[in-house]
Length: 183
Image (tube, rainbow, N blue to C red; front, side, top):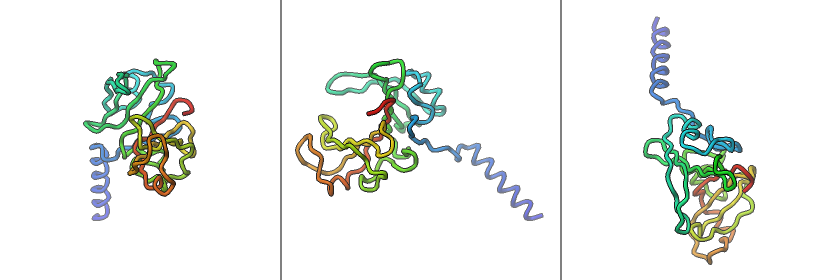
């Protein structure tokens, strides 16, 4: 009798926590995109909202070198999750996703805050950031060529140069990007 009551109580607890949303599925970035957002997703608030149920999607602008550009912003409440941009050659479809939330991983192996030296497979084709990305290292993921990893850290070297390997190893992932084509 007591065992049956314990099983019933455990079942009720599981049902109530699931109903309260405690059993959420963590978002993960992969070769196809983020959640339901990918290269085939129309670039609109409605389409991105449909691909990301439970999240708020708004149309906003970002500024680069003084010029304004449209973007879609995905939030979970007040928390910034990702920024979504259209393709350069086809503004009707999603072209890139910029992951801003440390809780989102790249296939469970890379997250914002991970040190360069701990990322596996190792990032490839790193270049020094310029202008608003000055002081950062922009790399391709070592496994998926259309995913970029932006690393930042402490280094006051010349603009346009990567830091030495021992310094770069201490840099951490600042942003993870996904592109509908090869970077």
